[in-house]
Image (cartoon, rainbow, N blue to C red):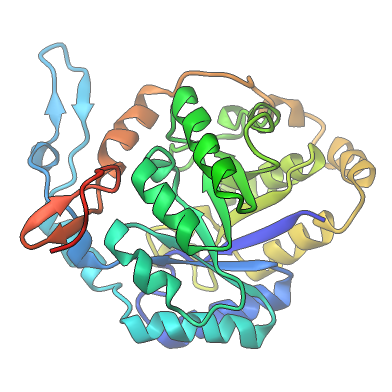
Length: 323
């Protein structure tokens, strides 16, 4: 049975009451896992080249513009306290759904592992799939790992899989496209089969635009045999949060859960009937990242880091975090 991950991201807007309602409604709608993000604004890493961005003389952009202070202020308004993360885990258990967390800075791993889990589930963002020291720390601290690969080069995926296999822990790798939002034609769902050489389970982390594409890509991925589907989830209006436009609501999650319960043959029959042009989503099993994806990789890989005694330590850095 495929597992559905409802990613609440920061659609809670820093409000514990919204967070509680999101967990409950995701569980009621059929989510198997509700995922949060352990993000602290103080872990945002200042990097000079993103203050104004970098554009070459020929007009080609080499770095996006994302000034530090406005971004830190935005994130600070969404910060959850450590106690809120305890609340998240407990509420998920109470709702009968498995909790999962993404950890964005290496120094937060001990805290994440200390939460009151029944089973310690961790999601690795695609920008950290190649943060090998962090990946080793996560395999040592968690029971099961789900790793996104969208912003990761093929040789990095192969090395990440070696670390995951060596850990002996169960794990899955998810295909995603790190353009937000991506189109159906950019989905390249054929890449899931390519990932099977590296992982016992694979899936699709879906960032298509909900108002335009609904849950078409997620249904196609399920029909093609995805073991996991991850979708951002919201109970607020789509324009109320930054991730709202790529977030499905409880009704859409319920529809997806109903689809996931069907046999693979039934899924494919329904897919042919409901989305006759679904093959546009297959794309290629192997591909180069687009220019936009490479720009996003440049910014988001290293966006969060560990400040230890006034020195920033990146997630891929082999140095100890001891102060």
